[in-house]
Amino acid sequence: MSYKALYRTYRPKTFLEVAGQKHIVKTLQNAFSFNKIAHAYLFSGPRGIGKTSMAKLFAKSLNCEEGLGQQCNKCSNCTSINDGSHPDVIEIDAASNNGVEEVRDLVEKVKYLPIKGKYKVYIIDEVHMMTSGAFNALLKTLEEPPSHVIFILATTEPHKVIPTIVSRCQRYDFTKVEDDALREKMIEILKLESINYELNAVNAIIELADGGVRDALSILEHVLAYAGNELKEKDVYTLFGLASTKEKLDLLTAVATNNVKEVLERFEGLVASGIDLKRLTTSLLDILKDLLIYLTTEEHFLLTLINEKQAIDLGKVINLAKLDEMIEALLKANADYKIVANIRSLFELVLLRLTTSMKKNDKQVREEKEVEKPKIVKNALPEKQIKKETVVEKKEVITPKKEEKNNGEIPGWLLDDEISSPKNEKKSKTKNVSLNGEKFVLDDHTLIHLMVLGNKEERLNLHDKWDYLNSFLGDPIKGEIASLLKDGRPYIVTNQVLVLEYDFEVLANRLNIKKNQNLINSLVKEMINREVFVYAVVRNDALRLQKEFLNLRQLDQLPKGDELELNLKEVRNE
Image (cartoon, rainbow, N blue to C red; front, side):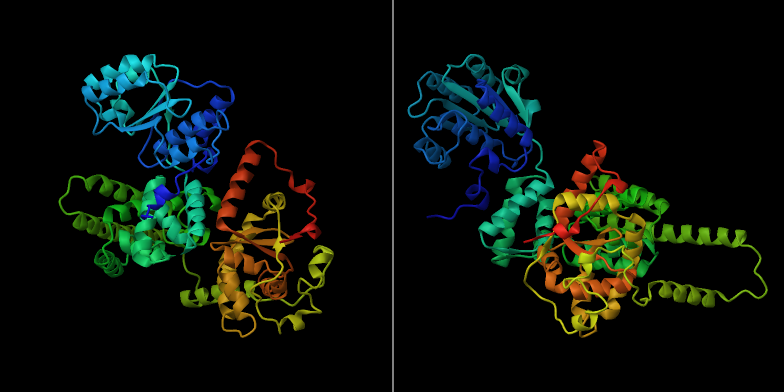
């Protein structure tokens, strides 16, 4: 059998398999449930988002031998529609059959009864390409077709379809597929194809696809043809001229810190690697948008391209005034790309102007502060000594304290064999990190309750202390656990529980293994000076939970903090 492209192999075969477009799927299903089938439909929207696939599913639901609205994919009607051989489902490409004669021939054949199915379905793709004469020839038939005929018109440019045609159709506007739905579909296909993948690589493809399922699968196929049976982030970047998130953040940091030499070096490196400067500009704007959202809301779940730690680090060198200047300059550059001959020179000039402009602004701010500075006390400490003492003071805050006895604030179950305690801490030092075993599992209900109880200020403070784990990386006993913790980010912090967010499921699962809790709990206790239960979630689940949390908050259905009774003894095993 000849090779079939991924987007053809994995065309949805039922309404449930459609990625996104839930509003359209629900409407069509209801139409079948109440037997309210229109004689003509207009499917409009961007390319590659499922218009033709939905039309075929609709045809299948009309002719399935199990009944109206069914898609068994087993009967002869369903299977022949799937392979494109059904005599009563006629696909017409209006781009190449757009003349009056072709439409008259179509109208002549409409009157004949179906050969095999219950309905004849005409799917006319790119219908906006038809000439005015062809539209007029179709008009009367489209208005009053025989009862056994259904027309489905598909177009990417509905404004080019004459109003008299549009008014005779039920119109469905398809939208770009949401990132979450596209990610779910791609991961499902990668698993079915037994392909190893990096989540960041999937996200990079989603960014390139811009909401199109067909584009996403075509890009995926391109990358796999280059890299073999493995999907890696670096291969996507290499093939499509993209810069990694770290490279973009380093460039923005160099601009914000007035480092002209580093800006030029990084710019040359990006150009030498074949980076698409238009796409890079858009990506930089997206990162700055994330930073603007975080600086004004401090809500990490609203971030899309960068995580909270990256936003905090970037926010240390870019204040709101600088941020506004950078966004304006890059937006103007994006518009100017259309009218300049040399995009590279324009982008380089924008970077240099931003870098030197910020240097002048910083100098002016320092001068103003000098003017406003109060008189120096005679016996004041030198500036270097003040800085040194400040660092020492900060270090003392995170210095591990001696273990304190449990005063009843920590549930007794946290001090059993699964969690470290003063009695078994010595024993835990002899354990290594387990890669498999029974895991703790918290359900969504419990996690949302924890989000209500979460202490935002303590979470942000813990973010600042997270680099403290670096001091343990060389330790033969605690090094592995420190490395595992370092890969995560504080997501929820309560009196009893610390939830970490991970990019990769394998790391989250490893942290949730019961055998590892002794060392994990012991190391975390050195950072926050109390025993807590440590749990991990992957980023996709974290985003999903945050959306659910916001929905409940908008509906005023979240419990109050003092009404919550968390019974963590009911944690289930996987």
